[in-house]
Amino acid sequence: MTTIIDVAARAGVSTATVSRVLSRPERVAEPTRLRVLEVVRTLGYAPNVAARTLRTLRAAKILLTVPDISNPFFASVIRGAEEAARDAGYAVVVGDTRHDPEIEDQYAEMLSRREVDGLIFLGHRLPESLQPLLDLRGDAAPIVNGCEYSPGIGVPSVHIDNAAASGEAFEHLVALGHRDIGVITGPTISPISRDRLSGATAAAARHGLVDRLRVRTADYSAGVAFEQARALLLEGVTALYCFSDEMAIGAISAVAEAGLSCPGDVSVVGFDDVPLARYFQPGLTTIAQPKAMIGRRAVELLVHILRDAPSPPRQVTLDHMLIVRGSTARPRH
Image (cartoon, rainbow, N blue to C red; front, side):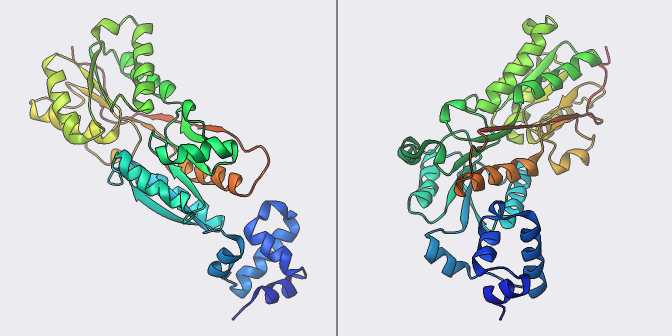
């Protein structure tokens, strides 16, 4: 069985350098780091994680909580996070909080008990049980928020500019000639929903369409969006803009149930660009978020904190993109 001594001897460095390459690679010069990593791969060396945990009082685990694990959007975020964590020598523990504050606190206790080294939460609430830790450690608290952006929470965050992205989605419909547009939001308690509604409303105001805007609130699910879309169709909208792809798919079903076609009679826009969006019939026009990159950058921020790196960035805003597919067209009338 290969040991750290074997790796050090082959690479011509000390065992301390090998350990540093595997635990804090940013502190090792690149030529040395690459040489050690090549020897690690060649010899098939695997560190004894359990022993290292006992020595460093680190669990070598990151907790990642998601508000709804059944949502395909989060699957891509989790995959990106796991890849980045594995590269940094951490395992990922995933918790499904189901939008329940009590469950969020139960998972957060894992950090308080030091069963995990850090927390990335993809919802909009900081678990109440972690507020004392945040008050005590401030910027050094190993907590990162992904997807949402709530500056009042006071933790680093990775997200897109949801207001700007939403404005682009709405502008697309206006450019096609739509004037009576229905908007189906997510829960208004969510900063993401508020930002996306703000962006859509601002775009409507630029074109003098605020009075013709129809807004309904849903919960990011296809079922509730189906019901809200059905009501909006009765109000004569020619386009529906939904704050998630899952809701957009529900809206397209409501269009079909009403005996109408998409996009012939009603255009539909979603948000997220989940894998199914491009294969749905019609292909879904949507805002693409860099889902895997959100997970990866959130882990990188957290590892930055865990390794006491200087001046970690507080906020990371990633690029988004409007993807135009077959679910939008010029209005028939």
